[in-house]
Length: 329
Image 1 (cartoon, rainbow, N blue to C red):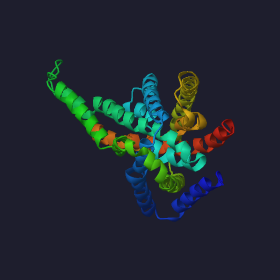
Image 2: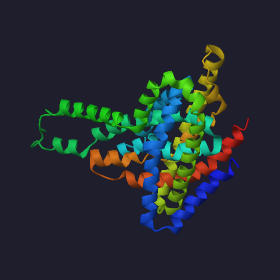
Image 3: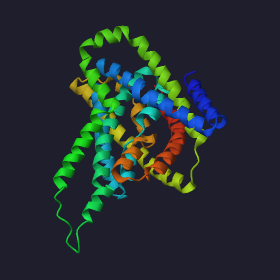
Image 4: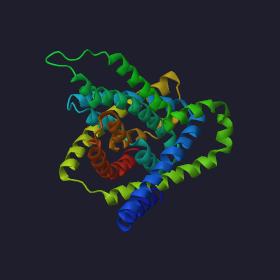
């Protein structure tokens, strides 16, 4: 049933997308997504951080380094800050967690949450840095001078401070970051939560697997895009999959060395290595379009995100059985 139930959930979502009126389907997707991202996933993060093992923070840090390398690599291909951000800032919550929970279970989610936390934190930092630095407001201010001599950049320090404040505010109000802080505060209660909260945690993992996969199915059923968008998204997705795969092999080699030589126990990570590779087939985060709207007053990220989501669904369908086969032991 491990493979059948997630596919059934996807089928339910696909059926809802084709049967419901478009505005009802959109409202259902938005409500379900809000329930997951604002309440269920943060609650899971609190529990996992409070009962965490070293691999949670190791995976989070590794994911952040991966995103930095990805931005540098994407910068050699494109100068578009939105595309660079879309290459590394992924929908690791709504797309990734239900897939991991549905196919590999609650223990795999414990490892994957580290990647989700790292992606959320670094995604907000990179988003503010890339899009604020290329904002239309900044370019307009630079054009206010006359002739060949631009106006003095008297607002540069203020702009930099505003960027820093915005980034910090985004982190402070981000549900995953708040959940991490609450989880760290609950560390002393970790043994109690492990003993008495395990049943509740299992129920939550099933709930977001069920709801999340239905939402994914609705995305699949409602997707309408141009071939050019899909072709471009497929190219970036393949490049991302290669980068993540190579990097994940390196992370696992390092984790094995630390486990065997340095005595740092990464039992859960080494038992569920496939969760690192699933990052390579996830779509760009929906939050990118919000950041772009705020900083650049544009919406060019919308087709990038939508086409990336459709391509991601196909790549997830291919990746899951391959990862099941490769890591069957």
